[in-house]
Length: 331
Image 1 (cartoon, rainbow, N blue to C red):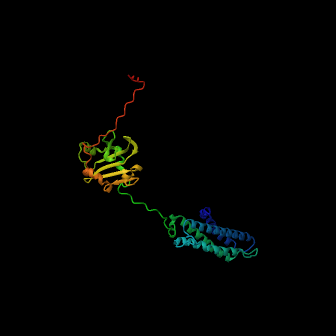
Image 2: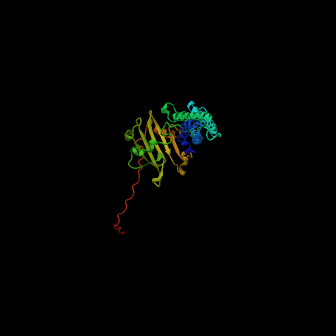
Image 3: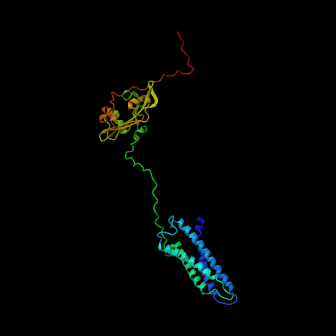
């Protein structure tokens, strides 16, 4: 059907060509006398060719109109079509009954020496004029540069919009779900060469990281300046040494002259659930009431006093004996 619709312009040339040639043959078939019968055949041939071509072009045009959206589903004629398209349809529809009547007039019984008569000529001229007008309006519809704009598609009933899941509004706070800056603590300055054990933070092994301003204040034992950031990473203790399980991540940032605390523990071990109230994943941020106890020690942005900082560092591992060393004889 798509191929047939695409051939509408090609099929429309057949009734137009018959409309151009048929009047000449009908005029030649008017005279009486011997040898007139071949003109009968010529008129009838052109009539049948034009009528069959008109039927094919009408059907292909209807299929093309359906494909381009000019026909609303359930209707055979365009609803609210442009005036130029209505003229094209009117000429083509009127040419069909006139062509049938003219073909009937050409096939009336005649004697061998008689012409076809005036009736076939009259109907044939009307049919030819309608066919030419149909082709002319179709040509102008297909080529808007000739002065006639392409007809707009009729206003079809809009399809209901597909249900879409509303997207959540973008979060204004980039750290609403994760402490983004604190997780990038390895980009800050390390304040200890090795982890130290802190009893104030659950007996975990900790290590401090700070930006330039925070590092200077920490070493001087002074309050943190505005905008500085200090992050403390931790790991769980395992037989007196840092173990394989990561502990919580602590962060302190000065904003508006007040410390802003963050406590992030992505996976709380089963043995530590009592510390978090049974929560298996914790992300607390100021002013969360869970951090009130932390503010008692860090009010005003103060870090641990240099005299009270933990100095419990990793115990040195015993040196292994050199291979091949001789054993000391016992006495």
